[in-house]
Amino acid sequence: MTDDFRIRVYGHAWAQDLLRRALQHGATRHAYLFAGPEHIGKTTLARAFAQALTCENLAGEDGLGACGRCRSCRLAAEGMHPDHRLFAPAGNQLRIDQIREVVREAALSPVESRYKVFIITEFERANVNAANALLKTLEEPSATTRIILVSHQPSGLLDTIISRCQLLRMRPLPESEVVRALQERLGLEEPDARRLARLSNGRIGRAFSLAEDPESWQSYNQRIQEMQAILAYSPAQRIAYAQALEKHKQLEIILQEWLLWWRDVLVIQNRGQALIVNQDHLDALTDLARSIPGPQIRRFVDAIMTTAAYLRKNVNRQLAMEALLLKAPHRE
Image (cartoon, rainbow, N blue to C red):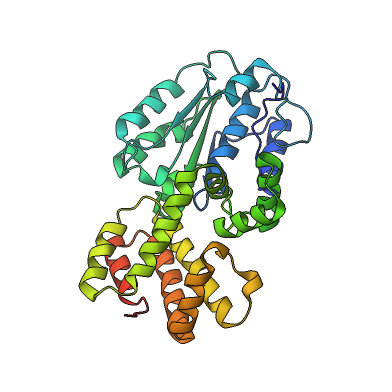
């Protein structure tokens, strides 16, 4: 078994450099907000930062500088560090009692490290009362407390929360970095790694999930089949499907999958088969390319991108999805 327990972060080099310099100079902020699309590595970066904050032998220029060998690093990697606390939504919301637990524990001294580190994921799911409950701790932080908020949709957060954190806006990784991560961590051959990198659209967590979890791959294929079935639905059937779909937790990912699918159809229409992402569905893509005019596809692609932007602004999800599906191409 390896004796290197560093939590590995792929990509986001600029963010790692910024955090590492703050650690080296003893100038870390009391609160951070890691923001960006789902599955791009925000929570992994937060865990690695927490590990470095409590490392006993912080040094070096690799990653965030954690040694990966001390007891603290090992406990952090195993998710058992007594001074690290991870809070995630219970159901669809971060509850006020969860935030009150953060506030209570933040007032206590660390058990064995320099800092108590709190990671709160999907903070956009905190209601107004829960968010306000955290404000006092953010305004008057303990010198031994560090809070890391993680959010897929920072536009939904209170301005008073954002202003009290150092904001790091993170983006999907370049395809080459996802390919390298899949090869290093899972030993995939380059063609397989590149296909998954393209399919994940730079979301490294999504790429790992598709590669490691057969159920994720089966779910993806099922969603692709459902999306094709929509084309033959009546308007009433499309609205009913939209009502079911808007409740899906990973709706943003589904829209990204649709974009890649219809991009592939357009690629075939323009004789660019070598660039197709969904090679496993070549027959279905070719059939659509032959039966649906390009202008219809391009209008639907524009509608998908517009809807994705609306969803990031917290519009009514059901109405947005109903409007989108009514614009989908139709065929018998």
